[in-house]
Image 1 (tube, rainbow, N blue to C red):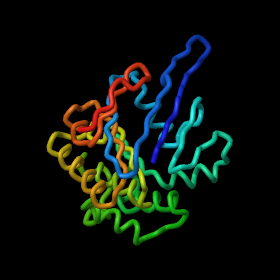
Image 2: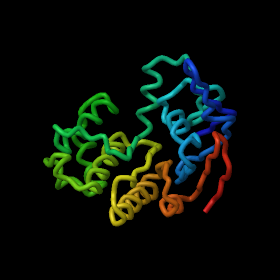
Image 3: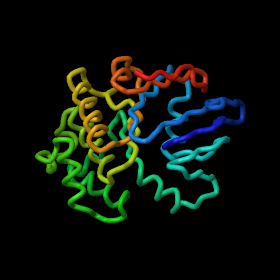
Length: 223
């Protein structure tokens, strides 16, 4: 379970101060499929960085699987928690000079602390990309790249997948395929899915839609 209590995030510079999050209170139970929506500047990116353990510069309380996460935790403790989260990005973030398999192997070493060839093969099989393991990213379509990116996120069997605009760089047909894949992962492995999107149809694929506005929760609807 993810719980955020009275979370505030402020960006400051020499001549500016921006309140990105203004008292966020959210609870996401395990195995829930949630979409996070809102206009640019609503606080979505700030929120998922905190949820994804990529930003600890905030005020408030974050409880991850019943453990309160503290800013003073050392890097090893935080790294161990990050292994329980998979990340999927709009621009794929694959390494072009490496094959599909090598991209997943690198993720295996980072996430698991070792090269687990079985986990690599299984993750590619789950997303239907095992036959493309020797291909390079520039030989793949946008939809195939995103499937590889999802395989990379799945290599450590994470409890949570955070997908930031995962359909933003693919066409309508591939969008349906990516959403179907995420739904299958959710249903098969009871993975918590948090998908950030500007697309209304993508948002409606989730069980729950949380809308942010001006750093606050504007609405929280169960579909």
